Image (tube, rainbow, N blue to C red):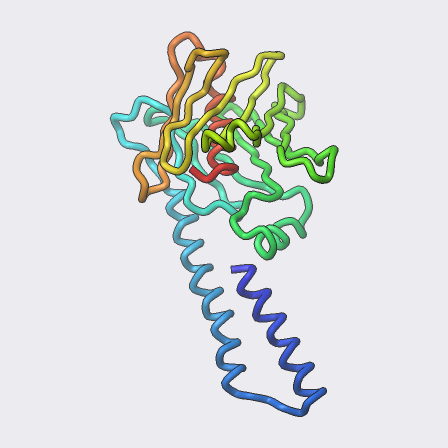
Length: 242
């Protein structure tokens, strides 16, 4: 939507400049240019529909896992997080500066730039994944501080490595209490495994390739880590678009 409006603005400026310099005005070009705001309106309506469905998501009654729906990804609209049939909280994407939303829509396109997530859990607890500025300009990996009620409890970072590229594997590392947990997947529609060393302690998947419903389950013995693992899994889906 933002990109289409940007094209309309640039095209309008070009037509005005052309008129003043060459004294020419073509109605066919104007009609073609008007397709951009029309297309933008259509995209906006689609996004609004997707956002409403995210906000109204309810898991199956027989569910025995964490679940959510991530249809619309670029706006700051709220989404719901469930465990079994119980709502655990809401979360939303946020931008640290107002202009980042517009740059994200115009330049980046698929919404992965300036990725920050804020979770509001039952009981008033707030957990935020706050993107950190890259230390090196050409660095590929993104980093996030994880804050619980304003206190740093860990961090996460993507793993864009040559080894992963060869295997067509996508990775993200979560570190809590100096212990690393590795999120690993092999592409769109693939399962995501969470590893502690060589042990799979949790896994998630998209319920099907059409509906953007996500399920996540943690193995017995790791219940204390469930919330932060589930929230990091959601970050993984935003970053790698499973």
